[in-house]
Length: 139
Length: 327
Image (cartoon, each protein chain N blue to C red):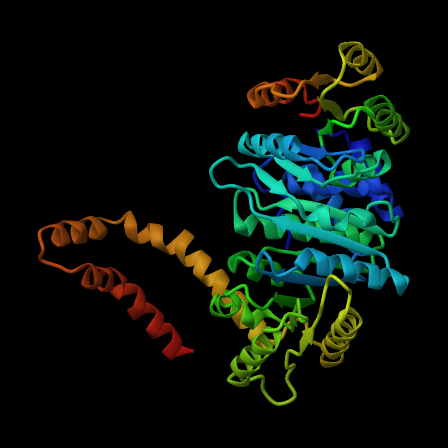
Protein backbone atom coordinates (compact mmCIF):
# COMPACT_ATOMS: atom_id res chain seq x y z
CA UNK A 1 0.00 0.00 0.00
CA UNK A 2 1.12 3.50 -0.68
CA UNK A 3 1.30 5.53 2.48
CA UNK A 4 0.44 8.97 1.28
CA UNK A 5 0.68 10.31 4.79
CA UNK A 6 4.47 10.12 4.97
CA UNK A 7 6.25 13.14 6.37
CA UNK A 8 6.60 15.73 3.61
CA UNK A 9 10.07 15.68 2.08
CA UNK A 10 10.05 18.51 -0.43
CA UNK A 11 13.26 19.13 -2.35
CA UNK A 12 14.18 21.85 -4.80
CA UNK A 13 14.54 20.16 -8.20
CA UNK A 14 16.87 21.72 -10.74
CA UNK A 15 17.44 20.82 -14.38
CA UNK A 16 21.01 21.60 -15.44
CA UNK A 17 21.08 21.66 -19.21
CA UNK A 18 23.68 22.40 -21.80
CA UNK A 19 22.07 23.63 -25.00
CA UNK A 20 23.90 24.31 -28.22
CA UNK A 21 26.65 22.58 -30.07
CA UNK A 22 29.84 23.17 -28.10
CA UNK A 23 30.93 20.10 -26.23
CA UNK A 24 32.33 21.44 -23.01
CA UNK A 25 30.35 20.83 -19.86
CA UNK A 26 32.82 21.31 -17.03
CA UNK A 27 31.05 24.45 -15.78
CA UNK A 28 27.68 22.72 -15.90
CA UNK A 29 29.03 19.78 -13.91
CA UNK A 30 30.62 22.04 -11.29
CA UNK A 31 27.35 23.84 -10.69
CA UNK A 32 25.40 20.55 -10.72
CA UNK A 33 27.63 19.18 -7.99
CA UNK A 34 27.37 22.37 -5.92
CA UNK A 35 23.58 22.30 -6.07
CA UNK A 36 23.51 18.65 -5.08
CA UNK A 37 25.79 19.41 -2.14
CA UNK A 38 23.37 22.17 -1.15
CA UNK A 39 20.64 19.53 -0.78
CA UNK A 40 18.94 19.94 -4.15
CA UNK A 41 17.97 17.24 -6.63
CA UNK A 42 19.84 17.91 -9.85
CA UNK A 43 18.66 16.40 -13.10
CA UNK A 44 21.54 16.39 -15.51
CA UNK A 45 20.89 15.74 -19.19
CA UNK A 46 24.27 16.01 -20.85
CA UNK A 47 25.35 17.93 -23.89
CA UNK A 48 23.70 19.27 -27.03
CA UNK A 49 20.15 19.71 -25.81
CA UNK A 50 17.66 21.51 -28.00
CA UNK A 51 15.29 24.02 -26.37
CA UNK A 52 12.45 21.58 -27.10
CA UNK A 53 14.24 18.77 -25.26
CA UNK A 54 15.08 21.04 -22.33
CA UNK A 55 11.52 22.21 -21.81
CA UNK A 56 10.03 18.75 -22.24
CA UNK A 57 12.55 17.37 -19.71
CA UNK A 58 11.68 20.18 -17.28
CA UNK A 59 8.03 19.25 -17.68
CA UNK A 60 8.48 15.50 -17.12
CA UNK A 61 10.79 16.06 -14.16
CA UNK A 62 8.57 18.84 -12.76
CA UNK A 63 11.56 20.98 -11.85
CA UNK A 64 11.50 24.29 -9.99
CA UNK A 65 14.56 25.66 -11.76
CA UNK A 66 16.22 25.37 -15.18
CA UNK A 67 19.90 26.26 -15.28
CA UNK A 68 21.20 26.81 -18.80
CA UNK A 69 24.93 26.67 -19.30
CA UNK A 70 25.86 28.39 -22.54
CA UNK A 71 29.31 29.13 -23.89
CA UNK A 72 28.63 28.93 -27.59
CA UNK A 73 27.47 32.50 -28.11
CA UNK A 74 24.06 31.31 -29.31
CA UNK A 75 22.32 32.49 -26.15
CA UNK A 76 20.19 35.09 -27.92
CA UNK A 77 18.48 32.41 -29.97
CA UNK A 78 18.46 29.48 -27.53
CA UNK A 79 17.29 31.22 -24.36
CA UNK A 80 14.33 33.14 -25.87
CA UNK A 81 13.16 29.88 -27.46
CA UNK A 82 13.27 28.11 -24.08
CA UNK A 83 11.25 30.95 -22.52
CA UNK A 84 8.74 30.86 -25.35
CA UNK A 85 8.22 27.10 -25.00
CA UNK A 86 7.80 27.43 -21.23
CA UNK A 87 5.08 30.02 -21.80
CA UNK A 88 3.36 27.80 -24.37
CA UNK A 89 3.18 24.99 -21.84
CA UNK A 90 2.06 27.22 -18.99
CA UNK A 91 5.29 26.71 -17.08
CA UNK A 92 6.09 30.35 -16.33
CA UNK A 93 6.57 29.48 -12.65
CA UNK A 94 9.83 27.68 -13.48
CA UNK A 95 12.84 29.82 -12.59
CA UNK A 96 15.25 30.17 -15.53
CA UNK A 97 18.93 30.90 -14.85
CA UNK A 98 21.66 31.36 -17.43
CA UNK A 99 25.36 30.79 -16.87
CA UNK A 100 28.08 31.60 -19.35
CA UNK A 101 29.92 34.36 -21.12
CA UNK A 102 27.08 36.77 -21.88
CA UNK A 103 27.67 40.42 -22.86
CA UNK A 104 26.05 42.87 -20.43
CA UNK A 105 23.65 44.21 -23.02
CA UNK A 106 22.42 40.69 -23.86
CA UNK A 107 22.11 39.82 -20.17
CA UNK A 108 19.84 42.84 -19.69
CA UNK A 109 17.67 41.79 -22.65
CA UNK A 110 17.44 38.19 -21.42
CA UNK A 111 16.30 39.39 -18.00
CA UNK A 112 13.66 41.54 -19.63
CA UNK A 113 12.42 38.49 -21.47
CA UNK A 114 12.01 36.53 -18.24
CA UNK A 115 15.38 35.06 -17.25
CA UNK A 116 15.66 35.37 -13.45
CA UNK A 117 19.42 35.89 -13.38
CA UNK A 118 22.54 35.63 -15.51
CA UNK A 119 25.69 34.31 -13.84
CA UNK A 120 29.14 34.94 -15.24
CA UNK A 121 31.77 32.20 -15.27
CA UNK A 122 33.53 32.20 -11.94
CA UNK A 123 30.47 33.21 -9.91
CA UNK A 124 30.86 31.56 -6.49
CA UNK A 125 28.55 28.55 -6.44
CA UNK A 126 27.26 29.66 -3.04
CA UNK A 127 25.79 32.75 -4.71
CA UNK A 128 23.86 30.57 -7.14
CA UNK A 129 22.58 28.36 -4.32
CA UNK A 130 21.48 31.40 -2.34
CA UNK A 131 19.76 32.94 -5.35
CA UNK A 132 17.80 29.76 -6.04
CA UNK A 133 16.71 29.37 -2.41
CA UNK A 134 15.48 32.95 -2.32
CA UNK A 135 13.70 32.96 -5.66
CA UNK A 136 12.15 29.53 -6.13
CA UNK A 137 8.52 30.20 -6.88
CA UNK A 138 6.99 27.04 -5.55
CA UNK A 139 6.69 26.34 -1.83
CA UNK B 1 -0.24 23.36 -1.43
CA UNK B 2 -2.79 22.99 -4.18
CA UNK B 3 -6.49 23.68 -4.01
CA UNK B 4 -9.17 21.03 -4.35
CA UNK B 5 -9.88 22.27 -7.87
CA UNK B 6 -6.21 21.96 -8.83
CA UNK B 7 -6.18 18.40 -7.52
CA UNK B 8 -9.30 17.53 -9.49
CA UNK B 9 -7.69 18.96 -12.62
CA UNK B 10 -4.52 16.95 -12.01
CA UNK B 11 -6.52 13.73 -11.54
CA UNK B 12 -8.48 14.31 -14.75
CA UNK B 13 -5.26 15.18 -16.55
CA UNK B 14 -3.56 11.98 -15.41
CA UNK B 15 -6.48 9.87 -16.63
CA UNK B 16 -6.29 11.61 -20.02
CA UNK B 17 -2.55 10.95 -20.13
CA UNK B 18 -1.79 14.66 -20.04
CA UNK B 19 1.93 14.98 -19.33
CA UNK B 20 2.03 18.03 -17.09
CA UNK B 21 -0.57 16.48 -14.77
CA UNK B 22 1.35 13.22 -14.70
CA UNK B 23 4.49 15.11 -13.67
CA UNK B 24 2.67 17.15 -11.00
CA UNK B 25 0.92 14.10 -9.55
CA UNK B 26 4.22 12.27 -9.18
CA UNK B 27 5.74 15.29 -7.38
CA UNK B 28 2.86 15.55 -4.92
CA UNK B 29 3.19 11.86 -4.08
CA UNK B 30 6.98 12.06 -3.89
CA UNK B 31 6.82 15.03 -1.55
CA UNK B 32 4.43 13.12 0.71
CA UNK B 33 1.87 15.92 0.60
CA UNK B 34 -1.69 15.33 1.84
CA UNK B 35 -3.05 15.83 -1.71
CA UNK B 36 -1.31 12.63 -2.72
CA UNK B 37 -3.90 10.52 -0.95
CA UNK B 38 -6.78 12.01 -2.94
CA UNK B 39 -4.90 11.50 -6.20
CA UNK B 40 -3.95 7.92 -5.44
CA UNK B 41 -7.43 6.84 -4.44
CA UNK B 42 -8.97 8.54 -7.48
CA UNK B 43 -6.64 6.85 -9.95
CA UNK B 44 -6.59 3.43 -8.24
CA UNK B 45 -9.53 2.01 -10.25
CA UNK B 46 -7.68 2.92 -13.45
CA UNK B 47 -4.49 1.06 -12.57
CA UNK B 48 -3.41 -2.55 -12.98
CA UNK B 49 -3.10 -2.69 -16.76
CA UNK B 50 0.61 -1.90 -17.16
CA UNK B 51 3.36 -4.49 -17.05
CA UNK B 52 5.93 -3.18 -14.58
CA UNK B 53 9.54 -4.26 -15.06
CA UNK B 54 12.29 -3.62 -12.50
CA UNK B 55 15.82 -3.27 -13.80
CA UNK B 56 18.70 -3.39 -11.40
CA UNK B 57 22.44 -3.86 -11.62
CA UNK B 58 25.71 -2.33 -10.57
CA UNK B 59 26.96 1.02 -11.84
CA UNK B 60 28.78 0.37 -15.08
CA UNK B 61 26.68 -2.65 -16.06
CA UNK B 62 25.09 -0.57 -18.82
CA UNK B 63 21.60 -0.43 -17.34
CA UNK B 64 20.69 3.01 -18.69
CA UNK B 65 21.85 2.18 -22.20
CA UNK B 66 19.93 -1.09 -22.05
CA UNK B 67 16.79 0.71 -20.90
CA UNK B 68 17.18 3.13 -23.79
CA UNK B 69 17.23 0.20 -26.23
CA UNK B 70 14.36 -1.56 -24.45
CA UNK B 71 12.22 1.56 -24.70
CA UNK B 72 12.99 1.85 -28.43
CA UNK B 73 12.11 -1.81 -28.99
CA UNK B 74 8.82 -1.45 -27.11
CA UNK B 75 8.02 1.69 -29.12
CA UNK B 76 8.55 -0.25 -32.36
CA UNK B 77 5.92 -2.66 -31.02
CA UNK B 78 3.58 0.29 -30.53
CA UNK B 79 3.67 0.28 -26.73
CA UNK B 80 3.73 3.41 -24.59
CA UNK B 81 6.57 3.29 -22.08
CA UNK B 82 7.10 4.98 -18.72
CA UNK B 83 10.52 5.00 -17.05
CA UNK B 84 11.18 5.66 -13.36
CA UNK B 85 14.92 6.00 -12.72
CA UNK B 86 15.89 5.91 -9.05
CA UNK B 87 19.23 7.13 -7.72
CA UNK B 88 20.47 7.48 -4.15
CA UNK B 89 20.16 10.65 -2.14
CA UNK B 90 23.39 11.76 -0.47
CA UNK B 91 22.99 10.89 3.21
CA UNK B 92 25.09 13.92 4.13
CA UNK B 93 23.47 16.71 2.14
CA UNK B 94 20.03 15.36 1.21
CA UNK B 95 20.77 16.28 -2.40
CA UNK B 96 21.09 13.99 -5.38
CA UNK B 97 22.64 13.90 -8.82
CA UNK B 98 20.19 12.30 -11.25
CA UNK B 99 21.98 11.57 -14.49
CA UNK B 100 20.09 8.67 -16.03
CA UNK B 101 18.56 10.81 -18.75
CA UNK B 102 21.96 11.45 -20.34
CA UNK B 103 21.73 8.12 -22.15
CA UNK B 104 18.06 8.54 -23.03
CA UNK B 105 18.14 12.06 -24.50
CA UNK B 106 16.61 11.16 -27.84
CA UNK B 107 13.54 9.66 -26.14
CA UNK B 108 12.57 12.98 -24.56
CA UNK B 109 10.42 14.25 -27.40
CA UNK B 110 8.61 10.95 -28.05
CA UNK B 111 5.04 11.48 -26.87
CA UNK B 112 4.74 7.76 -26.11
CA UNK B 113 7.56 7.90 -23.55
CA UNK B 114 7.66 9.53 -20.13
CA UNK B 115 10.84 9.49 -18.06
CA UNK B 116 11.01 10.52 -14.43
CA UNK B 117 14.15 10.63 -12.24
CA UNK B 118 13.68 10.05 -8.53
CA UNK B 119 16.01 10.23 -5.55
CA UNK B 120 15.69 7.89 -2.57
CA UNK B 121 15.35 10.87 -0.17
CA UNK B 122 15.14 9.94 3.55
CA UNK B 123 14.74 6.25 3.62
CA UNK B 124 15.16 3.26 1.43
CA UNK B 125 11.76 2.10 2.68
CA UNK B 126 10.19 5.41 1.76
CA UNK B 127 11.23 5.35 -1.86
CA UNK B 128 9.17 2.23 -2.38
CA UNK B 129 6.07 4.25 -1.52
CA UNK B 130 7.05 7.14 -3.79
CA UNK B 131 8.08 4.83 -6.62
CA UNK B 132 4.89 2.81 -6.24
CA UNK B 133 2.93 6.04 -6.48
CA UNK B 134 4.82 7.08 -9.62
CA UNK B 135 4.17 3.68 -11.18
CA UNK B 136 0.44 3.95 -10.41
CA UNK B 137 0.27 7.42 -11.97
CA UNK B 138 1.98 6.22 -15.17
CA UNK B 139 -0.23 3.12 -15.22
CA UNK B 140 -3.40 5.23 -14.86
CA UNK B 141 -2.11 7.58 -17.57
CA UNK B 142 -2.10 4.72 -20.05
CA UNK B 143 1.52 3.62 -20.26
CA UNK B 144 1.62 -0.07 -21.24
CA UNK B 145 5.08 -0.88 -19.94
CA UNK B 146 6.75 0.80 -16.98
CA UNK B 147 10.47 0.31 -16.40
CA UNK B 148 11.78 1.00 -12.90
CA UNK B 149 15.55 1.39 -12.71
CA UNK B 150 17.46 1.05 -9.43
CA UNK B 151 21.14 1.16 -8.56
CA UNK B 152 21.75 -2.42 -7.54
CA UNK B 153 22.35 -1.54 -3.90
CA UNK B 154 20.63 -4.56 -2.40
CA UNK B 155 18.06 -3.24 0.05
CA UNK B 156 16.54 -0.75 -2.35
CA UNK B 157 16.13 -3.32 -5.07
CA UNK B 158 14.42 -5.78 -2.77
CA UNK B 159 12.07 -2.95 -1.77
CA UNK B 160 11.31 -2.20 -5.41
CA UNK B 161 10.72 -5.89 -6.22
CA UNK B 162 7.38 -5.80 -4.44
CA UNK B 163 5.97 -3.23 -6.85
CA UNK B 164 7.12 -4.70 -10.16
CA UNK B 165 6.01 -7.82 -12.02
CA UNK B 166 9.31 -8.85 -13.55
CA UNK B 167 12.80 -8.15 -12.18
CA UNK B 168 15.82 -8.01 -14.50
CA UNK B 169 19.25 -8.26 -12.90
CA UNK B 170 21.85 -6.80 -15.23
CA UNK B 171 25.43 -8.05 -14.96
CA UNK B 172 28.44 -7.20 -17.05
CA UNK B 173 31.77 -8.96 -17.40
CA UNK B 174 34.84 -7.40 -15.89
CA UNK B 175 33.14 -5.29 -13.24
CA UNK B 176 34.37 -7.65 -10.58
CA UNK B 177 31.15 -7.37 -8.66
CA UNK B 178 28.99 -9.94 -10.43
CA UNK B 179 29.43 -12.40 -7.61
CA UNK B 180 29.04 -9.54 -5.14
CA UNK B 181 25.58 -8.85 -6.51
CA UNK B 182 24.71 -12.48 -6.05
CA UNK B 183 25.97 -12.47 -2.46
CA UNK B 184 23.97 -9.39 -1.59
CA UNK B 185 20.81 -11.46 -1.85
CA UNK B 186 19.53 -9.77 -4.99
CA UNK B 187 19.76 -13.01 -6.89
CA UNK B 188 16.60 -14.33 -5.28
CA UNK B 189 14.51 -11.46 -6.60
CA UNK B 190 15.70 -11.79 -10.22
CA UNK B 191 13.27 -13.29 -12.74
CA UNK B 192 15.63 -12.79 -15.67
CA UNK B 193 19.41 -12.44 -15.66
CA UNK B 194 20.90 -10.19 -18.29
CA UNK B 195 24.58 -10.44 -19.16
CA UNK B 196 25.18 -7.15 -20.89
CA UNK B 197 28.31 -6.21 -22.88
CA UNK B 198 28.15 -9.77 -24.17
CA UNK B 199 30.61 -8.86 -26.93
CA UNK B 200 33.44 -8.58 -24.39
CA UNK B 201 35.84 -11.54 -24.41
CA UNK B 202 35.16 -12.51 -20.78
CA UNK B 203 31.37 -12.53 -21.19
CA UNK B 204 31.38 -16.33 -21.57
CA UNK B 205 33.02 -16.61 -18.17
CA UNK B 206 30.33 -14.42 -16.57
CA UNK B 207 27.62 -16.58 -18.11
CA UNK B 208 29.40 -19.75 -16.98
CA UNK B 209 29.76 -18.38 -13.42
CA UNK B 210 26.10 -17.51 -13.36
CA UNK B 211 25.04 -20.94 -14.65
CA UNK B 212 27.11 -22.67 -11.97
CA UNK B 213 25.57 -20.53 -9.22
CA UNK B 214 22.02 -21.00 -10.53
CA UNK B 215 22.52 -24.77 -10.76
CA UNK B 216 22.62 -24.94 -6.99
CA UNK B 217 19.27 -23.21 -6.69
CA UNK B 218 16.04 -25.11 -6.22
CA UNK B 219 13.17 -23.69 -8.23
CA UNK B 220 10.72 -26.49 -7.49
CA UNK B 221 8.64 -28.63 -9.87
CA UNK B 222 7.42 -26.50 -12.75
CA UNK B 223 8.77 -23.41 -11.02
CA UNK B 224 10.07 -20.41 -12.96
CA UNK B 225 13.74 -20.88 -13.77
CA UNK B 226 15.30 -17.46 -14.49
CA UNK B 227 16.73 -17.48 -18.00
CA UNK B 228 20.04 -15.83 -18.86
CA UNK B 229 19.88 -13.39 -21.77
CA UNK B 230 22.99 -11.99 -23.43
CA UNK B 231 22.75 -8.41 -24.66
CA UNK B 232 24.96 -5.75 -26.18
CA UNK B 233 23.06 -2.61 -25.16
CA UNK B 234 25.20 -0.34 -27.36
CA UNK B 235 24.08 -2.10 -30.54
CA UNK B 236 20.73 -3.39 -29.32
CA UNK B 237 21.76 -7.01 -29.80
CA UNK B 238 19.70 -9.40 -27.67
CA UNK B 239 17.08 -6.79 -26.78
CA UNK B 240 14.34 -8.51 -28.79
CA UNK B 241 15.07 -11.78 -27.03
CA UNK B 242 14.97 -9.95 -23.69
CA UNK B 243 11.51 -8.62 -24.47
CA UNK B 244 10.40 -12.14 -25.43
CA UNK B 245 11.62 -13.44 -22.07
CA UNK B 246 9.87 -10.62 -20.22
CA UNK B 247 6.65 -11.57 -22.04
CA UNK B 248 7.23 -15.25 -21.29
CA UNK B 249 7.61 -14.44 -17.59
CA UNK B 250 4.45 -12.37 -17.62
CA UNK B 251 2.49 -15.17 -19.30
CA UNK B 252 3.89 -17.76 -16.90
CA UNK B 253 2.88 -15.75 -13.84
CA UNK B 254 -0.59 -15.11 -15.27
CA UNK B 255 -1.14 -18.77 -16.10
CA UNK B 256 0.02 -19.85 -12.66
CA UNK B 257 -2.14 -17.16 -11.07
CA UNK B 258 0.84 -15.86 -9.12
CA UNK B 259 1.83 -12.33 -8.23
CA UNK B 260 5.32 -13.38 -7.00
CA UNK B 261 7.43 -16.53 -7.03
CA UNK B 262 8.10 -18.25 -3.71
CA UNK B 263 11.80 -17.42 -3.84
CA UNK B 264 11.12 -13.75 -4.35
CA UNK B 265 8.54 -13.59 -1.58
CA UNK B 266 11.00 -15.18 0.85
CA UNK B 267 13.71 -12.67 -0.08
CA UNK B 268 11.33 -9.74 0.24
CA UNK B 269 9.97 -10.98 3.55
CA UNK B 270 13.44 -11.54 4.97
CA UNK B 271 14.44 -8.03 3.95
CA UNK B 272 11.28 -6.53 5.45
CA UNK B 273 11.91 -8.49 8.67
CA UNK B 274 15.53 -7.38 8.78
CA UNK B 275 14.46 -3.75 8.48
CA UNK B 276 11.73 -4.12 11.09
CA UNK B 277 14.08 -5.86 13.54
CA UNK B 278 16.55 -3.00 13.24
CA UNK B 279 13.97 -0.24 13.50
CA UNK B 280 11.51 -1.78 15.98
CA UNK B 281 13.19 -4.55 18.00
CA UNK B 282 16.73 -3.23 18.40
CA UNK B 283 15.65 -0.02 20.20
CA UNK B 284 13.59 -2.08 22.67
CA UNK B 285 16.80 -3.81 23.66
CA UNK B 286 19.23 -0.88 23.57
CA UNK B 287 16.94 1.31 25.67
CA UNK B 288 16.51 -1.28 28.42
CA UNK B 289 18.17 -1.36 31.83
CA UNK B 290 19.46 -4.85 30.98
CA UNK B 291 21.40 -3.33 28.06
CA UNK B 292 23.08 -0.85 30.43
CA UNK B 293 23.83 -3.70 32.81
CA UNK B 294 25.48 -5.70 30.05
CA UNK B 295 27.53 -2.64 29.04
CA UNK B 296 28.89 -2.32 32.61
CA UNK B 297 29.79 -6.00 32.77
CA UNK B 298 31.57 -5.90 29.41
CA UNK B 299 33.46 -2.75 30.51
CA UNK B 300 34.86 -4.49 33.54
CA UNK B 301 35.73 -7.58 31.58
CA UNK B 302 33.21 -9.88 33.27
CA UNK B 303 31.31 -10.53 30.05
CA UNK B 304 32.28 -10.77 26.38
CA UNK B 305 30.43 -8.78 23.71
CA UNK B 306 29.15 -11.96 22.06
CA UNK B 307 27.90 -13.43 25.34
CA UNK B 308 26.29 -10.08 26.17
CA UNK B 309 24.35 -10.09 22.91
CA UNK B 310 23.23 -13.69 23.51
CA UNK B 311 22.06 -12.75 26.97
CA UNK B 312 20.04 -9.78 25.78
CA UNK B 313 18.44 -11.80 23.02
CA UNK B 314 17.67 -14.87 25.13
CA UNK B 315 14.10 -13.91 26.15
CA UNK B 316 13.18 -13.03 22.56
CA UNK B 317 14.58 -16.28 21.24
CA UNK B 318 12.71 -18.27 23.92
CA UNK B 319 9.48 -16.59 23.00
CA UNK B 320 9.90 -17.06 19.23
CA UNK B 321 10.80 -20.72 19.71
CA UNK B 322 7.63 -21.22 21.76
CA UNK B 323 5.56 -19.61 19.02
CA UNK B 324 6.95 -21.65 16.22
CA UNK B 325 6.50 -24.90 18.15
CA UNK B 326 2.87 -24.01 18.77
CA UNK B 327 2.40 -23.32 15.07
